[in-house]
Image (tube, rainbow over all chains, first blue to last red; front, side, top):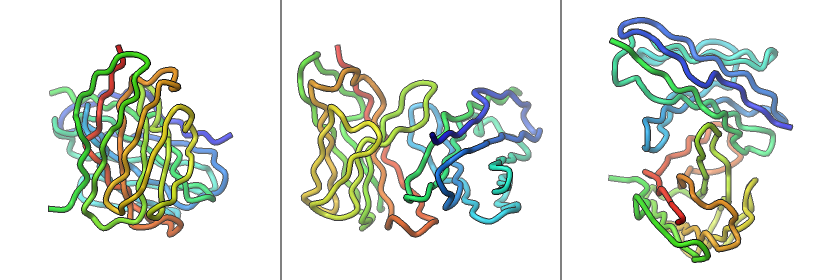
Length: 109
Length: 115
């Protein structure tokens, strides 16, 4: 079966750096997405990786290793507004998105 | 402004009643999707449509039905056959399927509670 694993919850301090990991086992691979979802709201797109390596976008970076079936989302200079759930999703060989359960990130002052 | 709208935000229904959730987009996207989100679980695909008058079942289509009569609209009906309908329902759209990078844009969601 297809599986996406992420930690359920993480806590970090305002101004610090946090890394949210995602491991996957899917039928094929056509890219990995990270979305942010505030409680009770719609997910919004953060990043996309299809080749190995690091993609940087402001305070957020995302890394992919296809051989290891592994990705992480790195958030720098954490702000209180970064408190949200972070969803990892993989596009499989049928171009369907397989979603992880999400990681709830709690930011403390 | 382009975007996706879902209505209503909150919906209450009695057990045994069918209910229809609205989803409209003005992004001119071909593909539209319905997901269900439950606490502690990832988004699960109910139905998707790549073109008008055509749609496919997702992983959990039982107890649900959809139509795609217009490009802009993709309503979801939760029927009385759905065993556990209380959930947060999200509609999404994207430019096309099968092109690798295909960002999905989400509506604000409808929280359905069946009493």
